[in-house]
Length: 111
Image 1 (cartoon, rainbow, N blue to C red):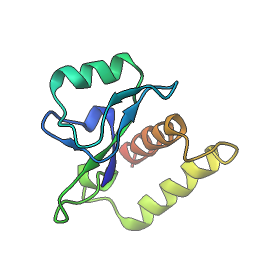
Image 2 (cartoon, one colour; image 1 turned 90 degrees about the vertical axis):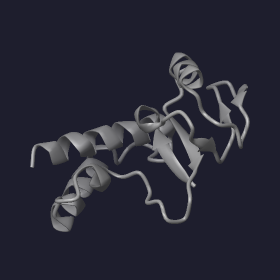
Image 3 (cartoon, one colour; image 1 turned 60 degrees about the vertical axis):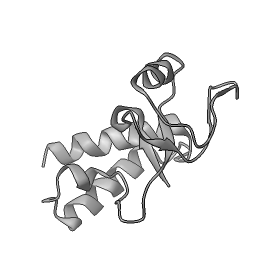
Image 4 (cartoon, rainbow, N blue to C red; image 1 turned 135 degrees about the vertical axis):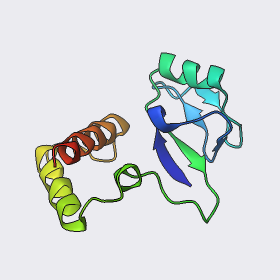
């Protein structure tokens, strides 16, 4: 299982958990396969991420995957800096988690 941001979801992926809108209304049950049409619906309903079933050999979606040349020390410092920016927020909230991810990507792009 891996929580994947909406911009990295692709048609053909399988949901590990149900996707619900902000009010808790079920949009798609666990086990459903994503399509381009469903991804468009997710964006319309403000879905920022989904829990995707992944094979054991696949790695978790991560910033490192995009750029494997990032020094682990630089990554750690960037993560700490971003965590400091959001220390008054709930890092488990989907929107805060997405904002933290975007900040981390931008911070690493400047390196």
